[in-house]
Image: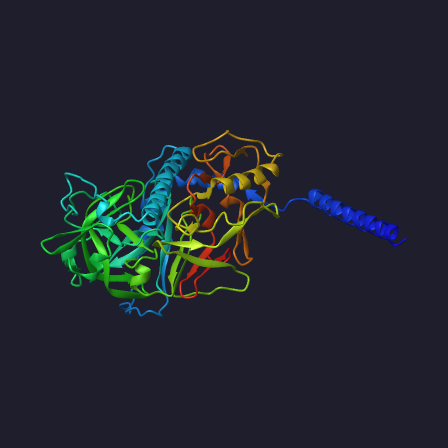
Length: 500
């Protein structure tokens, strides 16, 4: 008699569980997805004004620095701050319309991503430096055998980088340098020029600085270069980038000044006499990577942070050293390192949600494997976030399912395969997209950080792209308007949308 009663009880429990599960599933399916508003008009207004911005009338070129006392010398615990600016504020655009600007930027972006992937592959596969051959250019004269500053977006030349103004030498000569978390070697263009591209400031003359010192071939900094040579006991360097740009010259040390907040003696930097590529407007590059020659390592910074202004904005923000201020409401994630290569900053990413619903993908899809492949890096020099193909497809498909009500645009434009026609709209509600980080924190992206205009007619595209590489990269389109803090001492990445 007990057995039938057991069956009756089991049937009751099973039916109850079924009804509960079905009810929960129905509620989930019927629940409205989480949305946010994209300001179409504001985005299109920026596309129409960014190309017509007159750099000669920019406040950056007309505002004179305040007359203050000489900045104090930096110590490893001092906060330093610099402004960040958009290249468009002082370099006239050569593009006929906004679409050609976007296509130019995406072409360069693809080259940069390929260069990053190649650099990591070389490190993972253990290719010896001696197997790497310098660029052979017959015209090259040198053949190789808490600080704060302003930051700006460099859209007009298709670079996607941001610029900061730094002083070099004694007396200090101020110049704009490209800000790059994916590079280590700092360098500037130097007289005499074998071949120098156009920059907005006068080219640096080493003889004008009383603190400039050439480094010998036996200097410890020389041994840290990936590609170097020796001539007349001077250390020569060469750095090549994924887009084909390069710089060649001598490695030296000089004093570097960070606005009015401080200066550092004997910073190793390249003095480039042959420099080619899409750095137009900038005088060189400030390397914020994790390698030994980066400015962050040379100053022994415990942290640095930046907020990247909108890529089409003439506004500025800041780059800060040693001034970590993470709040309880900030999204945080582990700052990870790859044992095979120290340049890049890896972040613990667990996945995404769209419309408030978690996107289903394999748990280990963003992990660095035993060989050093895979993982996710933060890179301010890459524009569009690249995701391992399976992760991208899952994210895109989840977004498409919740945007069936939106008018589709072109089937594909360059990197983008998901585009919409918002030409008749002033604002539009779109599903939210959020990053989810290892440890449980998440960050909702503003709509303009994942739906971007690709022309001035109202075509907007989903600003993520797939990559055949196992490496994923969070680019500056997704970072814009967010304060990104690299807490090097505690190995934490902080992300805050309200500290710019």
